[in-house]
Image (cartoon, rainbow, N blue to C red; front, side, top):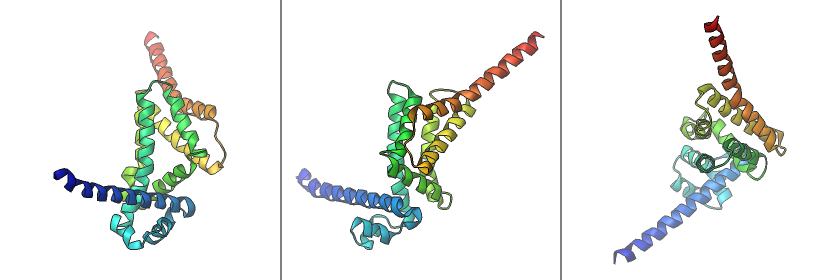
Length: 205
């Protein structure tokens, strides 16, 4: 009896989840086409082929809609970086390959992520999700070094490379991206080692 009562509710929940996903995908399509400034309940509803009232039913405030759209992309990146961290293999190479995707098959979603993340400067509700990429890269970097400056450098380099690839609008070279990431990760460590050698030399003299 209880199973029979549960099925209609489960069906409604599934339909609701499907509708939410469709609205989020429509939002990302609007961002890709018109930029983040083009996102309104009306433009998203038109893109999704639904009424504006249905859009506002699922996402009452525009910030709710923008956060959901950014989260859908950010969560995908988090899953990919988590996979790189957890699985065996060259983690820096894995990060380079993920960054390079932003100039190829993942370009549209990477562009939407950049658009919405930049909007976080004006819409604070987006800020926690906008920080997710940087926090994920920092977590990956922490598996390679315990130097806070090296971790910060890798995060900054990853951010800059993603932006440059989108601006240049040309396929990126994975080997080049990996070399830049390696330089960012390694340079602070070399400085630290050099400082230690100088300290040893001073103690000897």
